Length: 429
Image 1 (cartoon, rainbow, N blue to C red):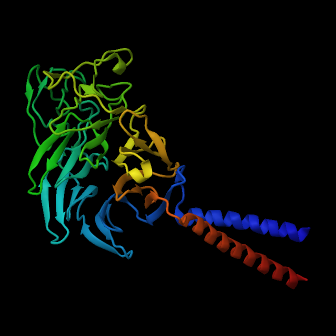
Image 2: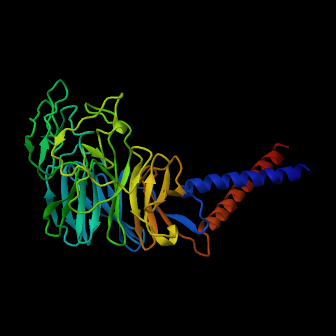
Image 3: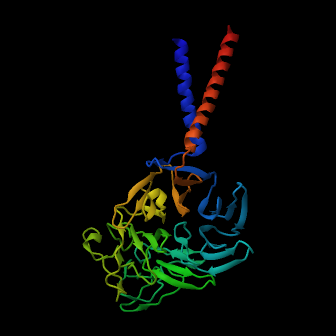
């Protein structure tokens, strides 16, 4: 009976050891409900990672905050670019040219010739990782630049990269003459400065709350405007641009209540309404009231009094973080996938349908970038420093093979400990 109990204890300890080993070695944590979908880890152990892109089959570009690496198919790592001063906050690959936001500049770097060019200087940002995003679009690259303020009014004077930072408008707009902070600060102004009613605020490039388009000759033009912040975006197979747009918050000198995140299809030349509209609704709407006080417009003669409505209104704010086109082999339909960082879930969205959960990533994940290529989803976990590969399951389940391997290792370890312990007991006798 005692021998039987010993064997039971050994098996239990082996299972426990195998489970801990499996978690440690594989960084497990993804919970996929669909039995036809599996995942593996293509890269692990990368720290200070900012973004990634797929360079070629089984090769990745990895942007860290101070360099860009190429991970080759054989596992070798090559440094392609080093940031000499400051830090990298965004990256995208267009053909064989890397575009990156370095400090407050847009830089292009040709892989074949190592040629570096400064495409845009003095982007009006502070330097956070999520202020700018880059996205390949046909033979161009799109650059999104978020607003510096919550709703167009500067709360505190800020100097970043040697320049005074406040919201710039990319297009000409008219001021309502509204003033905040003891009647000192107006819309699209530095702190302590204002503008008069019907005064034209001239548009400039680069600017805030907009998307810029850059072609192969580094020509820059406005793609869309009035967009507070692109949280995530993607190009679908039919060349449509979808973006998750963050709403305004109940904070600052011009707070807006009850706003959320939205998903839009964005077309060239569109104005989505920020800072006087959100989700297609004017901020004067009762839904945005703060302490039952109406929020007023800060702009006059709007480009449109009816900016387009979103495809989807999220039930939370600051929730959607990244997005990709949905692979039909995994999602069984065309649409988009996005990561909900508050629910820690990867979700599938198709117009007219409530988003559904694909994967539960768990509380220990921090997914900061998603790519889709050849019906495979790649997810970058910035917290763990790993890239997950999610795919349609084949006949062999590698994870089942792995758990058997770790069970065997655990059983061997426990058996070895038991033998050593038994020999020690005999010597004592």
